[in-house]
Every structure is written in C-alpha cells, then in structure tokens.
Image 1 (tube, chains in turn yellow, purple):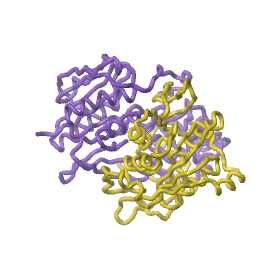
Image 2: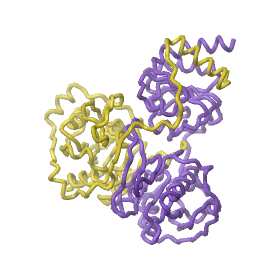
Image 3: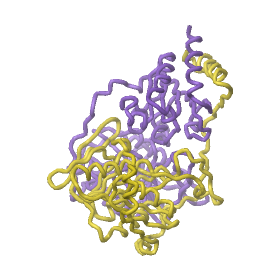
Image 4: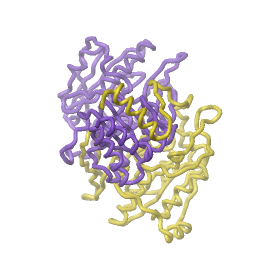
Length: 256
Length: 324
C-alpha cells in the first residue's frame, strides 16, 4: 500500500509562547517539534508498510524549519518526503492547507492518506477530512487500528464514552489517527544516515497558489484566556504549602 | 429578512446528548444579540427524540429521517444535511463538538465551500460582527475568529461552553423531512464497549489526577499515596493511560470519563482542552504544576506553582497528621 502521512511542525509543548505585535499569531523565535498526533500517524503508516509492503511518503507545509520534521520521518523509515516550503503556509486555514496538499499530490496515486488527530497549535482537527472531500475519497476519524480486508480496509474507530466501532472502507481513503495507539520508534543511526539520501521534493507556494481561495477564517485577535474563576495562589516551601492546603481541605472544602 | 441559526442536534439511541442542549443555549444567546431566529434539526432513522426539543424556544424543528440514517455514516449524514441546508439557507449552522461532529462537520461545511470553526467556546456580537472564541495552542491562548462571506457558516461548540439548564423554554413545531438516498461508501458495524468499566469515577467525591508532569511510572505511587490518604480515587490524563501507567478506565477527559467530584487535585497536568472538558465541572480544583503558564490554572480554584515531587509527599504526610 502506498501511504501519504501529513505532518506538521508546531511549537514545542513547553515553549514560552509570546504573541506577535498584531496579536494575531505567536512569535517565531521558539523551539519547534513534530505535532505529536502526527508522529502516531507516521508510526501507524510505518507499521502497516512493514506488515503489508508498500511505500510511506510524508508531506508538510511550512517554512524551511519544517524540513526537520520530514527528515526525522525519513530517518524513522519513511521512503520520501514532500515539503511545501513557504512562510505563508503558516497562516492558511485548514481548507487551504488541504487544497495545497491536494494540489501537490495530484500526479501521485496513494491508497491511503493519514493525518494526526489534530494539531497542537490550531487544533482544527479537519485537514484530513477536508482533504478527503477534495480528493473525493471516503474518510474516517479517530482511528485505532487498520487492517486490509477484501481489497479495502477495516478500521477501528474510537467513539465517545469508551465505545468503539469497526468500519469497512474502500481504498483510497483518508484516516485521522488517534494518538497513543502505538509505541513511537526512535530513529536509528543507520536510519539518520540513510535519510540524507532519500528524496525530498520541494513545492513552492506559487505551484499551489492557483488552487487556493481566500482564507475564510481569520484570527482577529489572540489573547491569554480571560479567567472566569478567582484562583487563589498558594506559595511557600513544600512544607508550608502542604500546611496551607490541609487547612483549606479541612476548613473550607471539608473533605478531611 | 431575519437570518437563521440552525442547530444540528445529536441523538444516540433516541436520547439527545447534553452538549446538543448546550449548543441550543449558545444559539439562543447569540440570537438575542443579533435578532436572528433559532431552528434545530435532528437526523435519525425515525426515532428522533423531538419531544425534548419541542419544549425549547425554537422557531422550528426539522426531523430528518431515512432508513440510511439509522446508523451514522459521514456520507449519509452529509447527504441529508446538505439537502436540508440548501433548502433552508441558514446563515449559521451550529453543531455540538462531539466525535461524530468532528467526523462529518468539516465535510459538510466543505460541500458549501466553507471551513468549520471547530471546538468554539462561545460567540459574541461586536460592532455588527459575529466573532467566535476558540482555544489555541492547547488552551494557552484564546482566539477571536471571524468568518468571511455570506454563509452558511459552520461552527461547533465545545462541551460545557454553555449551560444546558439555561435553555429557554417554548413550544416548537416539528417538520418531518424524508431524506433522499445517498451513496454510502463505508460500512459501519455496531458500536461496542471493550471492557466493562470497573471504576466509575463520576461517583468519586475526591479525585487525585496525574499528568505528564509525573514523569515516570514509579512516581504514580506518590499520587496513589496522596489519594489513599484522602480516601479518593486516582485518575489521569490521556498520555498516562496511553503509556499504560494507569488503566484506560481511569482516564478523565473527552475520550475518558467526565467527572465532577467535590475535590479534583491535578498533579502535573498541563490542562489540554481534551482533559479540561472532562473535569471542569468539579466543585473545587486544586492544581500543582511547575509551569505557571499551564492552562490548568485557568480553571483551578487553588494554584500551586511548584515541584510536585516535593509538595505531594509533604501534603500526604500533613493529611495523615490531620486525620490522625
């Protein structure tokens, strides 16, 4: 099976994020890492390839720094990469990112496209579903397991409240992969060496621009959440903090 | 002509879910500011719980029914709802942000060339413009988001964004609409539960919950000792259960259990949205985290910025003394 995995680079989880001057986005000068849900999507694709053969291609849209995510994926075992490289991809809405990907892969023939569940920055959770719609393919979200069946696939979807469901799907299809369903591998030294010689195709903004539409969704303002709750801050040495908390638990919350 | 907000309510086995009612409350609140009217729609195989909706202040209820809609498929639902929206032309389509909505709403919006504002926490009407609030960067920031064009716009509201008990009562007429046939490409099997949940965290009075900040599996013992001293249950955010450090049945959040104990003690939990929606109904929340910027502090009643590995053992000892 030929699988495309959509991956995104996002600010590191504990990065001290600061707003830009217009307060419409965060400043760029922080550390970046792979969007964690996408790492699980990649692992699912690599495991599927190891079992059934095929090819794993990774794709990302973003500035030059985003290449790091693709290199890591190649080092873990992906066969080749596609980098839509431009700063402008950062501010495209989910639909335009999906349009960019659809345009960039129009001469390819994938059986499956995987994305992570959602991104840790925007958190739209829709690029995969939109890509399916643009490609005219079926899709399923929050997938835990994938197995080939009768020329198609059978997937396990997570529903709410501890429920699951199996769904049979045709190929090609788009799946968004649940985080935590597999154990992420590390890149080996050999893998890192081999990655340097694996093909990485660059796609410019101009190459996909004709497929794009004006962003429908605009971030007018980004701000630190407005507190709806009064929060009491307790400080001090651990022993002191413990005493203050116990007083609270006993006298105010009455749980002791 | 006045604009319309259409709420797509969700039902399972003939029962409305709570977040659908919350979404109607959100629609009613926005309608008050804009002067728009609110309608609701339900999709079902023919057993839609319209009675629950009839008691709400709604201009109209559409019960979209068809044999292909008895079981959820994205193709079936999008086909039926696309036809409804084309016929009724609402300005704004509001949906509850459930797993099912995550699955079909982006596709539904895309058929109108629109992009969904997903997981919004509210809406406001400012200077003649409707803005939607949503959390970004795992809750570290809130964004005011505007949508371009004349609509239909598509927005999903997060669980708990509005309060179901603030639903405005009224009487609404039901219009039954027979859905046309659609080409359905996926074959779903019946939903199932993996194992009986042995722990019902929703009944717990005290919950001590751990997140990534606990760092290693062996450190869970620290939290367990605290839970034991308090006579409470231990729980965790998703990454801890994914790692197998605690069983899945102890997970709190959108994919785990929703809890509302008297006391929720969050240890090393950053407070991603998916976790917050599962515990923000707690009567009292105490959070201990080394990162002063952690979103968990937004919902905490008591915030302790510090090293949990120093504070938790001290707290356990202090509680034991107090109880002795």
